[in-house]
Image (cartoon, rainbow, N blue to C red; front, side, top):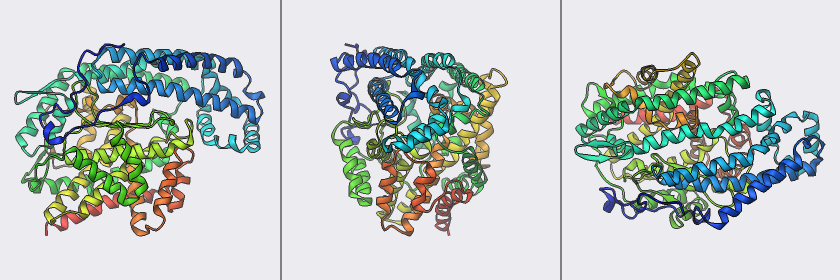
Length: 606
């Protein structure tokens, strides 16, 4: 049994625990009952044998398979993905509950190394698939409808054909992957282990970041300065992680012949570079009518001539400081989902009833929030760090949207259920929008409506403007790293180069804010992931506009889109709604929704 050095069951130990109510914790038994469970040992043994057998049966032989033979090969590969995914889901979720526990970290690392070693013989599979002639593969697909169903997967694999290396190099890079994972774990464990002291209270990063939304401005300032102090003390470690990760990526990209640092992400997202650039350019062009205009308005509400960074997420003066208990948060989100379509509420309900959510803030727990799909014959798990802020309710709505999407897409099977990141944010952002619209409709006064509208505008600016600024920062970081090692000051300067542009002229930036790039996990775990948030927000705004204009039959089309998982390109998924993400005007439609909300807020000033 892996020893546990710290208690886990302290989900309600936060200062406001009584107000929050009883917060749920994960029950991971649907994956495995324990690290030493016989079922887990059985699956590891099966995986090792099956990977060896798969290679013996198919290596060097894909070109000789008929349609039925290739389908059987894909089915076996899918079964391997299922078991390896189940093992790594269990090890990863258990680790994220308490990243500072050495036993959990060791268990995760050991599972990763075993699965990497077991699956190294499978590297040939994608390489040989890419060596098949186009006409030959097309002929096989034409002969067998069940095989043709996997065409989207094969197309995504074959998109990497121009960047494929020799078999030996691909196996080497596969084995080397555990080294890159180690740098990610160093980042996670460093972040989770940081300690901040605010007014005599020791807090983790989630609790400290939460203070940036306090009504008390002095407390927001103290928290900001404490974040800057601790980040500054650890900045060399964060700079080393970013330098190493970016360099590793540059080396692999260079060997593969990828034209840009972003190419790999675009390929995995199944999205054209020009679509992403159209999104980026549309958002940057809209900075003045979005973030610049909104924050100037917010400065007026706060009675400030100049905004400081600790005012960005400040509540409005007329906003009541309140804690939203867990039961209220659950009921708010479930009622919004059910009002849209009872099927959506039915899918979401088990997350609350069956231990599929881990909500409490705990010592050593990973920061942030996510929904993990695990594998298609189990179910997703949602992680939150719930502190009872109204924004936490929206985070619950967001992650639960992911969960609903993952449940619906599971019917596609292991290889086709996974949705490209650009579409993976659709259901999550749509879930937020449903929850917001329901709450707005129930507003009891103009003042409450104003607070809610402003909160939604801020969330959308954080999702669109802030994430595109993050994307620009990453583009600059990776371009600069290609020219040589970056000092912490170099990275700080790149961070600040996008902040004033995106936030607007009303902001001043306190000394130390230049280090705030350090805690963003996506930069390390998933380079260039962040534009998917802006993509998802713009897509959902356009979708919601269609829903408002013509609600008849929308729900069925929406469910069909989610059920498709990764089986269709974004152009095919959006076609039933009359939308086209390759049209630059598509992004303006979404951005205009945000601008329209700011118009409404400005009108309230008259």
